[in-house]
Image (cartoon, rainbow, N blue to C red):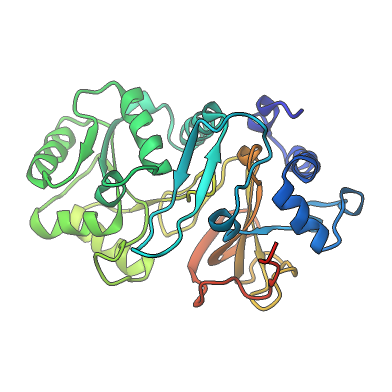
Length: 326
């Protein structure tokens, strides 16, 4: 068994690489779906000497299969948002404390202690459905903050506006985390000139507005809120870790998470840093599901392991991988 304490105590690249290889062998031995995928690629732990050799499971498998490396009881299932008629991803969780430790330690790493902040959440498209991992995280953060003004906001934008302005005047440390379309709704109906508020977008118009590029979104939000930067959170149903950007759309991972790019035409070919390609993610917090995932995002990774997202694949399937018929 792998001690999750060791995962969250990773400090160096060598420690990360060693743990990734251990996790791969564990998941090869215990995850039937991932084992079948590796077998189709003729990949065995004896072939895997470096993390670049590890196969990345296409993210669509979370829609069609139960991705589990644990025989523990499923205590929570996180589901992705989806339009009517589409299949949603399901991430079965057998140990919620791992997720809680992951998001708590990651936030601490980039922003400090949650209890030092007032947490204001504007996440209408998420809170209106069951199974959102983002809502679970933010709800835990709101409770941890122990501030009377922390909480979720839905349609009560006037109340949120007054709270933001009052807290800003009182020099409180505030995190406003919101889905993109809702943040735009807020600045279109209220005027702000905020000095102490961190505005963090979680991406996505969720079908409520036309999708726009991140730079245009951030410029609009900066003008609307009167802030110098817009922060971002990068996460998804299929991950138990988040990356954060403090501006310019460049994200940093916690020590137990890495991003690698792959060729868009050949999913099994990895690219050097600085080259744009499909985003592969290693999330060692996914110890009980699958830690090696090929996403549908496009981006580039820099020499310091920071990364940016530049778009998504045009088609619903990840190109270059025809192994979906397990």
